[in-house]
Every structure is written in structure tokens, then in C-alpha cells.
Length: 163
Image 1: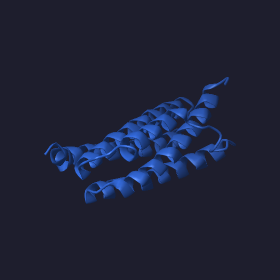
Image 2: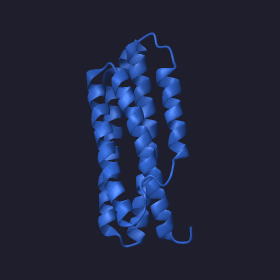
Image 3: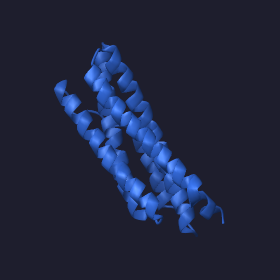
């Protein structure tokens, strides 16, 4: 890796891989969730992740790079946490599982926020303003998804889990 552009492409590939892994985990959590609002938010989340992946694939191809050129080990670890804490854990109450789903989703979302933010900063520095704008849109959408999950937790899921 010799240039900021090399780093930019590498990190776009990494976040693309992260999104692919988190999309699959999000779809599984959507099936496991019991709260209808949480199910809807997870559905919107996986659809948003797919839109971000499509945008990144187009950007990467525009740079002559394969979107699948990297495998994100960081998200791999977070997805293992989803499996361990959502699917391989016994829950006596559905609301407690839903609270755990929110926890795991937000951890993955925060990882995506970091990736999108770094790539957006690189795009600005490289004067790739159209790409920076696209990355900013998906960064904003990821923040919105994170805020939705916080609102669901605070709006009743955590209360129900504490009962």
C-alpha cells in the first residue's frame, strides 16, 4: 500500500465485506426478534446495508477493484458474538433476547460507522467528492439505524426485559 488511494480502496473492500457479513447476521436476527417494531427496524437495516453494498461495489468497480477483494476479520468477530449471544444463548424471556439483538446490532452498526467515516474522509482528501457524498449518505443512514435501535430499547424493550 503506497498511497492514500490504495488505502481508500482497501478500506472500501473491507467495509464491503463487513456489510456483507452484517447483512446476513441482521437477517438472522430479524427472524429471531419477537417485537414487531424491532423486526421492522432489522428489516430496514438489512435493506439499507444492501444499498450501501451496491454503492460500494459500484465505487470499487470504478477504481478497477473487486468488491470481494478483502475479508473483514473485525466484522467476522462481531458476527461470532451475534451467534454466541443471540443464537447460542438460552433466554427465558423474548424481551431479553430482543434487548440482546439490539445490543449486537448496534455493535455491528458502530463498526460500519467507523468504516464509512474513514472512507468518507479519504474520499474528501482524494477530491472524490461524489464518492464522499455517497459515503456520507450511507454513514448518515447507519447513524439513523443506530438511533432507531436506541429508541426501541429505551421505548419499551429494555423495560419489558427488566420486568
